Every structure is written in structure tokens, then in C-alpha cells.
Image (cartoon, rainbow, N blue to C red; front, top):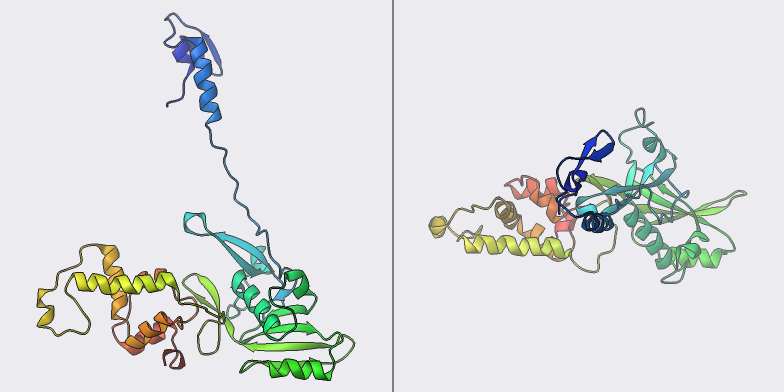
Length: 312
């Protein structure tokens, strides 16, 4: 309903005042008041977006490769979806102009938090399903280095036998280094690095795979791959049929379906990796749709961040 004005009551408005007019009112004053009250009650209050994330358990305990503190930040994506990050503090206050650009200054909060909590649990330093209050009693600092991530642990009452037990649980490539002195500690060194792809940062192991442990393949990416093959089937096109068989092929008019269909022309080993959840960190359906995929399979692997090992 359009907003009611004083003219509906027969008044004449001048600046911020109204005066009785010569014509009769269009609406009865009592009806006018009731409708105006209804309109006022239906006005949606503007919701202010939060500018700081509410839960940031690594705040004050994570630094970048230069030792600069990384502080929580919040970004909004499509449909108002929130993304949490840890960002080097100078960038948040406009002081990043002179910083080394080869150092990643932003990391997805969920990824690094899951990595820290997962490693502490795997090494038996905290019980499964522990909260962050328990976890913070075990580790001191998280260092986001250029080629690895170091979690500094408080040595506490850990004796030689306990430290030996931790070493036995280390995964391939991980190291546990004892640091002596007054502030004795253990540094858990995890090979891997933050990577920047598609406007987001992820944690990737040296072979390019995600450092986050997957329990299942990405359902959105799987659905996109499935739909890509369905689009080709519906249009009598296939990357494995002959030229003669493709003579009955139909063009794909819809631009969205054309972008989806390109995914079906990925190298077979890349498609197998997607089905099994072994794709590189950060590879999403949205990313595939937004890029021009190379024709050569070797070029596809390079462009998408696959290593030979991850495609086996």
C-alpha cells in the first residue's frame, strides 16, 4: 500500500507544516490514523551487519610468516553468507603497502581452526570433542609460515616417555622439535601452506591436496559433474564418441548449462579425484564455472592445482 499523505485529509503541506485546504478530505481522519499505524508497524527494521566475527578461538594466538599478529575479520558473500578469516593486523589498519606480498596475510578461520584442533586430538594431547578452553591449555601459538604451519605446544609436565608417544603418532612429514630454555616448548611442524584461489584462502599440503581431512566428496561439486554429463547426453554430445556419432549433436542455448557442460571434458583422473574427494584445496563448482578450462589434460591439472600424486 502506498504511503498516506496529508493531502488525503484535505490539508495543504508547506515545508514541514500543513494547513486546512479548501477541498474535502478523501479519507476519513480516523481511517487515516488506523492505516498509518498499520503501515508504521509493518516497516522492517534495518538489520545492521556484524563487522566482527563472534567466535574466533585463535584470536591473539596466531601470527603470519613475519610474526605479525593475525586478527579476526568477517566478509559477506552471496545471499549474505558470512565468511570468517584471520588477517594480518597491518592490513586491517591500512598498513599493508610495504609488506612482502609473497606472504599470505589471510587464511580461512574454519580451516586453520579445524587443523589445530584435529592435530591436537590425533596426537592425544586433548580428548576427542574437546572445546577450545581445553585446547588453549595445550598450545601457545600458531605460526602460519611460508611452507609449513607450526603449532607451539607448552611442554608442561611432559616427560621423555610422553614426548616419545607423541612422536609415534606423527603423520608423514610432520616433525616435533624440542625447544629448551626458560620457556621450554615443543614445536609441531606440519608441512603445508595457505593458498589463494578463487578469491579465498585454503590450507594445502605440499602435493596440493587440502589439509582438511575429508570424510566425503564435495556434494555440490559432485552434483555439478553429474549434471554436466547429463547435459551432454541430452544434447547428443560426448567426449568419448566419434565425430560421426556427434553429427546429431545439438547446440546448448542456455549459457549456464554451457558452463556446466565444460566440466564433463575434464581429464578422467581429475574427475575421479573429484568423485573420491581428492581435489586440491579450494576447488569448487563455482570456481570451475567461472574459468575457461584448457583443452589439454596436462594444462587442466596445472590450472586447477593438481599434482601428479593427487591424480593417481
